[in-house]
Amino acid sequence: MEPTTGAPVDAVPRRVPVRQPRWQRLPSPGGTRDDGDDVFWAPIEEVHWDGTPLREETRKARRGSGPSARRARTRPGHPPDPLTGLAALVTLSLLAAFFAWVSAGPLWLAVGHSTAGSVAITSCSGGGLAQRCRGIFRAESGRFVAHGVRVSGVPAERTATGTVLPARMTGPQGSTAYADSGVGRHLRWLLGLLLVAGCAAGIARWTGATRLPDPRHRRWALAVALGGPLAITLGFLATAW
Image (tube, rainbow, N blue to C red):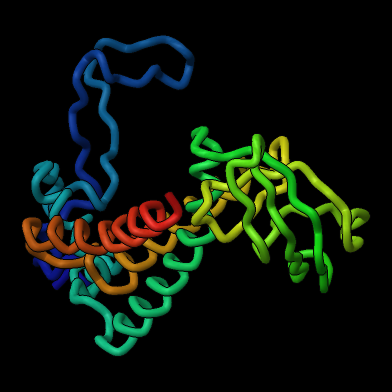
């Protein structure tokens, strides 16, 4: 028996030449093309033990039976551990609520729903991202006065008590006066909404909504995972009106 193929030794040729179509023939070693019986030796992986070429379906089946294909078939398609999914859902929902809360007011200001005025700083503590300032906001034309509002966007060199800064609020019921201007006023709501979208994508990923085998169930699960942070954001926008 032939040790590689298992066929009888006297039935296995050394290598069987396979005739190549005329348009695929290779030039002869001298550089000229011979129109005679040009042949080429097919790779051993593409022929049977007797030299006949493999069919295309057989080649695909062999390529699909390798280690990578077996790993793809055995890859689990079920959702992750329920405790992991629940923890991710709660954590990311809370983060989405926070980002939606800090983005609601700046978004209303960006679309023009605001009241201009000035704010007088009454107290400031901390610095950088930990800076906390309070003040008294007076709307233009004396429309309303808001005491003890949080003041956002106060420059580090203008935190002294009594400093007056131009600011805007969403309305008399607002709790924050925004003293920042230029690009900073848009970064607040843009970055916040991007982080909300990131939390929604994380919920869809870590709760297993993207890995449900049934397409209909997967679409519903994705709609719920993405719709939750969206509903939270709409709720905070309605509150900040």
